[in-house]
Amino acid sequence: MKAVVLRKPVEPDVLSYEEVPTPKVRQGWSLIKVKGFGINRSEIFTRHGWSPTVKLPRILGIECVGEVVKTTDPNRLHPGQRVISVMGGMGRAFDGSYAEEVLLPNKQIYSVQTDLDWDNLAAVPETYGTAFGSLKKLKLVDDNHLLIRGATSGVGVAAAKLARAMVPSITITGSTRHMEKAAELKAAGFDEVVQDKDQQLQISDQHYDRILELVGALTLPNSLTVSQADGIVCMTGELGGVWNLKEFEPISKLNGAYLTSFESGALNQETFDELFGLIKQNRLDVSPTKVFDLAHTADAQAFLDSHQSFGKVIVRVD
Image (cartoon, rainbow, N blue to C red; front, side, top):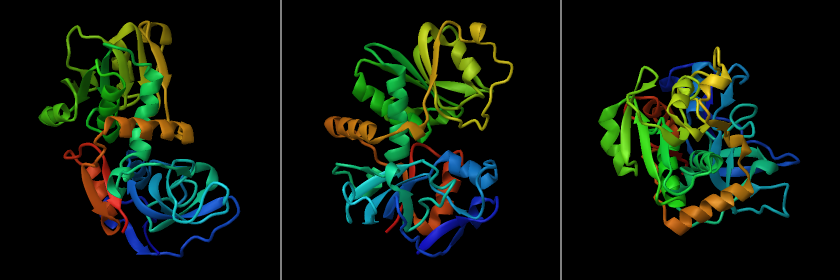
């Protein structure tokens, strides 16, 4: 089969598109024909060599959509069934979805009932799943003012669409370092756009009921200062490339807010069923911003890593 292999930390243009052996099915695992997958920041971090636990060579890819080819779980899965998968070590502990076929543990293969085409479906699992799980942690209610920090990311755009569907009366502000993207953000459903400069929001006295922190530890201390005293801040992303807080003194830094977190490894069948029900009920536009083919996966990574990136980037596997 064809796959994109990372053999050493490299720039995207030398990711290796090559022929590799098709994985052999073993007990507890199933073989999936990949129809598409999203490109994620964590895969770019791994390509840069910033994931020391990932042993190379490795086929990257932490999510996919596709069809069952062979399964060892016939009570739940069957050949030709439409399925999705995220995380669970895919693309990190074992070879992932940057390939025509992928071998996955049965426990992290989820069935899906949807009329979305493959391109739209490929935009959902990691991105919309993470956004949905995070918004549930934020416990949104009517007339909340939600700040999405890192709004131009795939999860940021997805969160705005989902939040509007979940609580129509909500006000949504998005932050970005590049204010030239403000029109795109408003077209995606944001009510307001604020600039993020040197890890500080360029605002005066504004405070927010709910904050979805996608940039990560780099901007979390500043996000906490603009939360309402009884607000909720959900730490989800690490777009800023900083994983740890330094000299964090919680009593003063939390400013009376509640701090929680979400990570996509917590996604499960029940959550996906609820998410796809919400997408169908509200006829949400989940279409990706940019679509590449498998041979140009390196270009997909390069685009996501550029200043031009916006929303979700996917790769179609024909």
